[in-house]
Length: 128
Image (cartoon, rainbow, N blue to C red; front, top):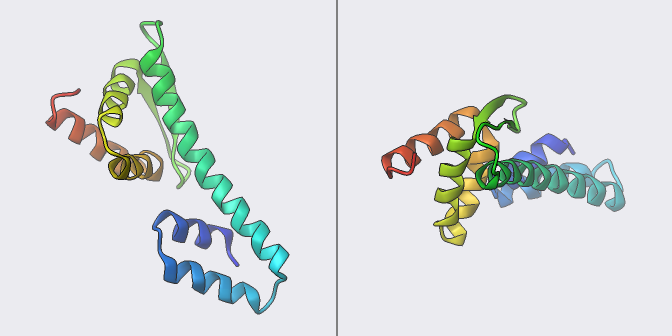
């Protein structure tokens, strides 16, 4: 089982792809190995989402006037974010319902393109 394929399927919440990856693994690996790979993929996803969200929160709530941090995306790209942008995005995030927060978190860790869509949405809502 390719961990990245599984991670992608988990990100997309694609049950068929998850089952397909598991079936492929059943042919050549033990259940324990499969569980380990699933666990590693979930950890990677949670760690990435948590890191970017923590960066937003840290910047948004910091007393320092000019802080910059770097967000990293699952495709390996990264981008700098300033305190003002982080504060606006965190304000936006705080006002979302649980379902919307999940989509926000996915966009925040997916790619620069999805991140820029969040920026545009925040600007459209006059938050940034």
